[in-house]
Length: 143
Image (cartoon, rainbow, N blue to C red; front, side, top):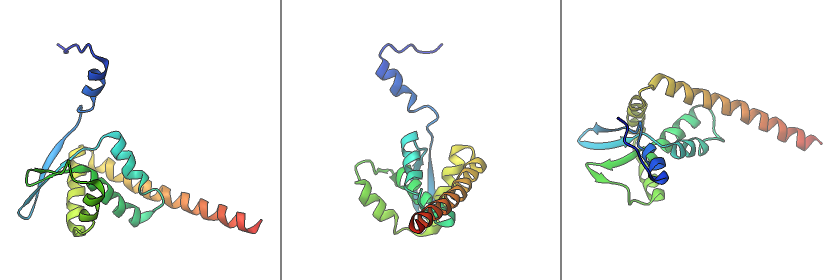
């Protein structure tokens, strides 16, 4: 039986945790907790990469996803860490660690192959968009 909720705000908020998953990933002797992103965080992670294409877009998306997906280190919550400071610190991590966490994130979604195809498609689409934009700028200069 489904629990009936009377308050519409409570009803809306109850959906936020549906399909939410988290996972502890061990990297050497550290335990890093990652969680699936909500729609806004996922969108923001793509928006930050829109002007990039190819490998640059993919590497940037990995970082943008990890900035938002990492919630704990060794059980310590990162909730109160300033987002800008969190980004600056994660930017110093080795690419191998980011790659490992990003792969675990894709597995956590339960659709790793589809997730990687979406990222690849976005990187390729951004190339097309960038070429179109360059051609438009070239046309503007020629007028």
